[in-house]
Image (cartoon, rainbow, N blue to C red; front, side, top):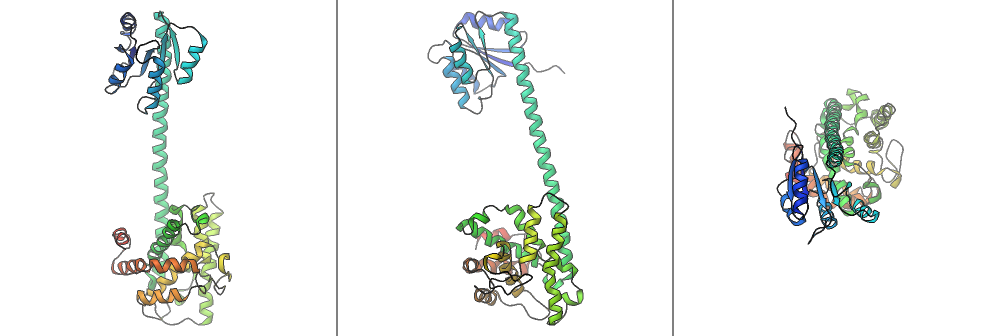
Length: 374
């Protein structure tokens, strides 16, 4: 297949120069003779050339002014421009090159020199466009590969979390609901610029999905304890409490095998600190106040709220009103008081999520519309 001929605009107010230039170049390129800079911009609205040969000395708008205007528009700023001039002083040449011209060609033209200079610059232009296409394609390939990795990561996460929920079957939907509560709280922190220095540094694409692993340590807890139809003994509760440390250690073990730790670091904090309490009476470390990482303080609110409204072997589900009351009573004891102030504002949305997800098989479908009406 024959290669497409490249297009050159020849802009000069001298008809003799236009005729001579077209005669020299027409066997090699598609040439558009244009008699003024003003008409150049009219033609550019219809055709984008591969190169512009631009005279400097023209009435109304000279070559320098035309080049400035070309560089101002994104659609024309990358078109290579070669100045045509009878000037020979270095100052004029420097001015043109400073404005973005790629070369100077002196008049009268030497046909072999003109052709070779144009050929060289068009070759560079072609190579640049080829490299740009390659980079664009490479970026698309990287984005595609990244999407595939994220999809694989999410598939693994979903499998692990489903395993946890399958074993601890009384908390079906718990992980999905707590993620939605968590996102409400984090969005509120961002909009109100509360704990701003910390929250604004988080990548929410990592933070929210990583919360799925907050109960991963339950995989190591006996079914007899997880699904006991009654209140746990102190010894059994002691074993149950170890799920926080077990989950944290498991995620830490994974972190040692990979350099991509932002996602896992959030997951480790969620797993290890979501049962700590503001007054220091929680577990596994008995951390208090701001010594508890913010991720853990956020998850504590989401986790307890959901536990209150869920069916458990040892209790019926509480209403969302009763759950709200208990959460508010936990201010400065179980929960960060700042977060409880936010929870109080968001409690109608918490209730809508709880009611919707309990009625639906999955929270995702239609939940965005539900939040929009809250």
